[in-house]
Length: 95
Image (cartoon, rainbow, N blue to C red; front, side, top):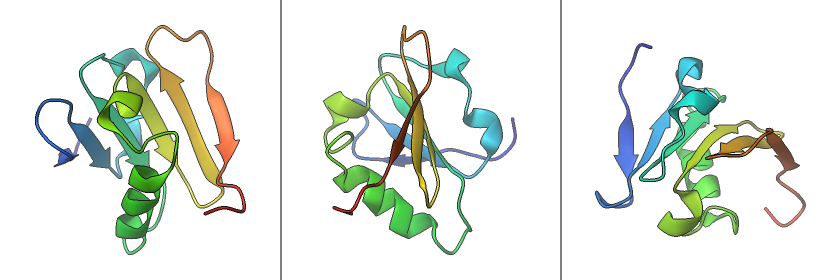
């Protein structure tokens, strides 16, 4: 895996944002942090970081912990710690 993580929202339960798709791997789910892979253009990354942090599914550290998330313009996919399958959602009309 190349590239570095970027941390957001405190050190107790960090959320790492990256544009490196190698980090979208359910094997790295951990109860103490969240990894968000941004599958968007580098010029859109800031917009999608804010979109994730404001989304009801991810708007607190507690809701983000234990997740590995793939974000795109169409929506998001995620793996949760100990989940047996991947979940896919549209952004919806609200956002």
